[in-house]
Length: 157
Image (cartoon, rainbow, N blue to C red; front, side, top):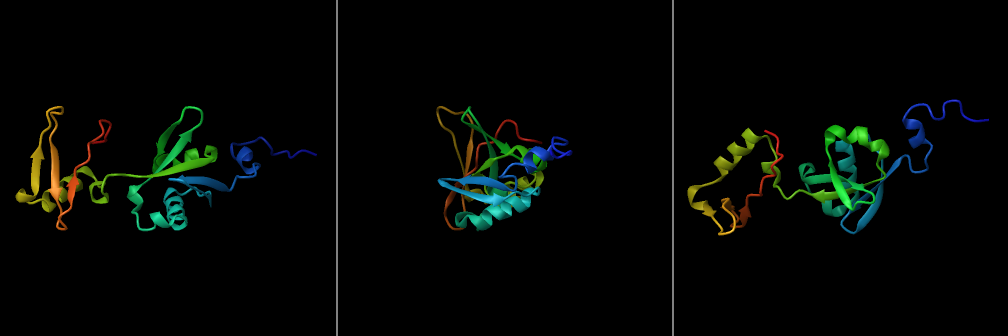
């Protein structure tokens, strides 16, 4: 006899599939399975626990992407939509943000942090012939040079 509840609600299809409780994760050349979790932060924690190279990476630097089948493209999954998209996800790709974590704060915090951390002698402005945009280069206390990342045009205010 068939199940009277089958087909009612969005979760039925997912629950009846063999991989309903696992999610495939891809990071560089490594592929692994983790348990599905409705909580985005707990999912990131599970990935970090399972991938040695990510254990010391801050959560803000980890980006989860949905791989779009057939078009060879990916879309970033934000924490706000994670729970909505999770039922349809079979795999996520993990990439690292190239923006330092201290600059991923709110714009006012970001501006204040950069102003406090820079000394006039440590900041140079460079201008290239092909690009009219200035690029700030900062020497850190360890004498490493850090280049401010290019801002994306769709950045929120």
